[in-house]
Image 1 (spheres, one colour):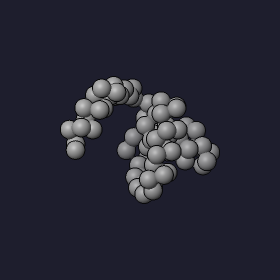
Image 2 (tube, one colour):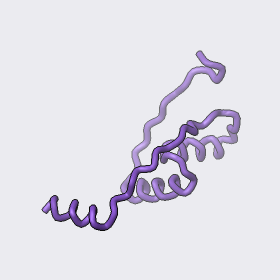
Image 3 (cartoon, helix red, strand yellow):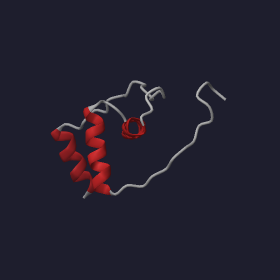
Image 4 (cartoon, one colour):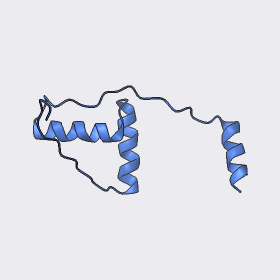
Length: 76
């Protein structure tokens, strides 16, 4: 056991609209969606001493328009 005690894992299912909005708002704060949800849960429960996972995120390269058009034509 670490200094915070036994850990528990929660699993939730959300719909596609909620998943899209969660992804957008998490990117606003430069967080992963799961980390953002964890922060909201901690805030709502009034628990501020639990650590969040703040590892650096890798930015994925967004495809340029030419790459996107090539990708779209390849799928057809």
